[in-house]
Image 1 (cartoon, one colour):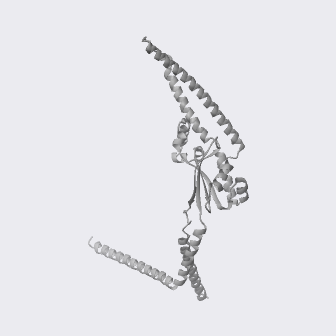
Image 2: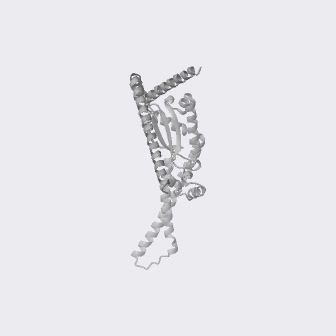
Image 3: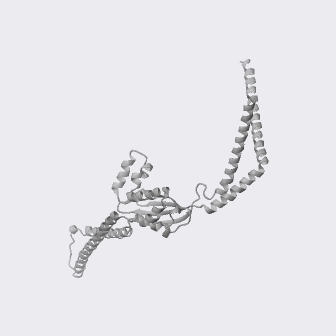
Length: 329
């Protein structure tokens, strides 16, 4: 045991000395690399300064001239027109990619079609609204979620298209207005004979139902007034009156309450059903600052200098390999 201990100590000392030696070598290599970088920038200070100045100037110019703006419209497709809405937006997006400005201007009605660069539509996920007073929708989500993640289920394409509200987003290169873009888009989306017929039928049915509900409410009021008058007359006559609980008066009052609530819902529905694709709100001209938009004055100088460095590295590599090739001849 005593003979092995000195050997172990010597091995440890050797290992430590090797590690410290490698660390010193790494520091020396780093210092050499740092010196070469400083030397490169000192040697090429004029070129680097010119590239930085050109990059900043060009970036400021492009940031000022090439802007992008985001626009959002919250819409509600009525009468089961969600798939129709999505297909129309896909059609417009395909025409934008093709550069078909004639279609965008003459068919869709966009006044400055060259300015619009992208359009898309996505559902606004609202599970609570989706299952509100709709037990069948709640059971559907439970059934689908049994085989997978609930988050994935609520965002699934099959489920998401059934949400009430959807966000229609598009991007333009310049400022726009309701008159130039939003109104033409909505007019184009609402121009469909098939859904106009469905709209007419649905609205007519609601109006008929409301007239019938008002008539029933009037009849219920007459019954309640008659009962109230009989009760008041009996009180004045000081005679004993027996009230039979089986008259179902409580059910009549509940029926009236339900009809009143239904009338309120119908009135609100008629407000939303005046359009096939109903616009709820729109937000225009939000400056797009994603990616390199508005940051070119910082990006271009760095990009130019990096390209210059790579070019110098390539030239140095080529010269080194050329010398090796000449020596090997």
